[in-house]
Image 1 (tube, rainbow, N blue to C red):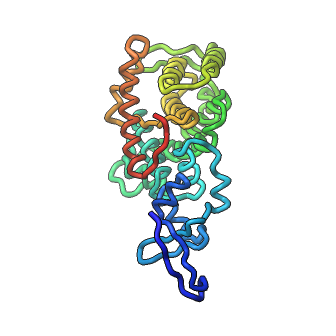
Image 2 (cartoon, rainbow, N blue to C red):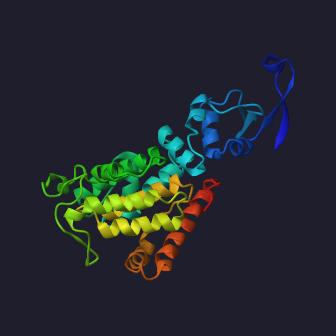
Length: 315
């Protein structure tokens, strides 16, 4: 949509200039309209002015210099997440992803914090009003999980390595009661055997070798698909390399690898929890169980992207 605006003589020597709308500028530069309005309101787009509630942007206006430097990926969603994280923008896709991913992943592992309490922690570093006692570890792990999401956004394009996976675990569990136990080994592979869902996992002495093998096989896949990422998640959970926190670290890795491979990521919410567990249990027999669960979660995230007018990812 183009239109002509006649500026006052003092502003432009009575010459007509062509202006475009926020919507057109947003599509031109693959930004959300919310971000463009923010740039206009903060005078970051030269020559933009407001008529009533409508922003008028010069047709030849360019992105702020800082924004140009941030286009480090061909993944439109990743660019939005990185941009909004660095801007500390509230109310956008980054804000929504932080709260939804943290709340649901923690709830799957037994956290009692509500969605509102999770949001309060992210927005205000408080938990709001509560009539019930709250586990301090739930609060710490929630705050830590926000930092983990920031890490996977910042390093989404980086190769998935053992050191990165260990860093996620260290961030997630730092400061918790578990971190004070010598045997727990925060940020390092487990020292004691453990189970998941009543099933045996890899013995501690075998973890380092199994993780190297898993990553080596994963590196061989040149163009990774959603199924490849889900299969890695299954193999990771079978190894269960850490004493605790494997599920959350595993789901963070899936989100990161979707971003790295320009695939729409997903969040396993509480409604899908039992289907998710069944899918992991039956992966070697019926892959469709877990695939369908993840695709449903992906559809839910796509609906959120549509709301924020973010399009362009391939799956």
